[in-house]
Image 1 (cartoon, rainbow, N blue to C red):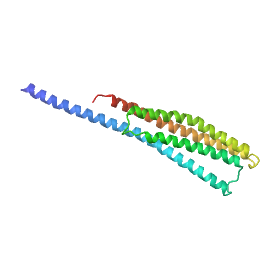
Image 2 (cartoon, rainbow, N blue to C red; image 1 turned 90 degrees about the vertical axis):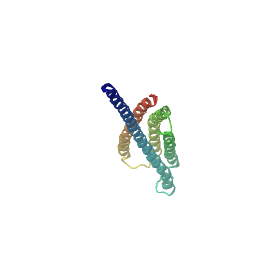
Image 3 (cartoon, rainbow, N blue to C red; image 1 turned 135 degrees about the vertical axis):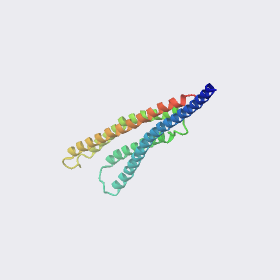
Image 4 (cartoon, helix red, strand yellow; image 1 turned 120 degrees about the vertical axis):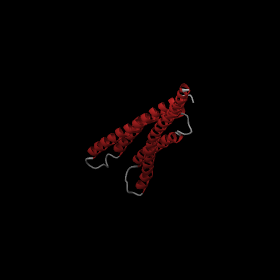
Length: 196
């Protein structure tokens, strides 16, 4: 009789342990999903603000130029506006990747592929976007050099230094959040591969 009671209590304890283990796995999976989703949302918000900023400059620049509040040669306008339009197109592209990142509807392998594409194009953007901006600024300075006020060289060096510092922190922000997403997707893939 004692042995039967011991078996019954062991069976109850074993069942409770299994339930507890399943609950712990579900809680851990939810925490990983929330952390990954938060990193994704930070990148999404950042890219939305980037799109708004570039759009404002794209619209403001022609208005200021055509109303006479910003005086420059037509070629300077075309160069700067062209750089802004390219920046706008790049931001729209990044947001098109973000929109497809749906953790509830897509499998982990699809999300990992989207994250890889985003990471790859973000790296290219750091090179291409920075290159376009530098070429645009140098072209503007070359075209408008006779109109610039004395001491513009020092101001430009300071502006480029500030831009470099901002770009450095922006790159770190992107890399940090991309690493969080990568790690979260790797951990979630383990849950997806587990049977049951």
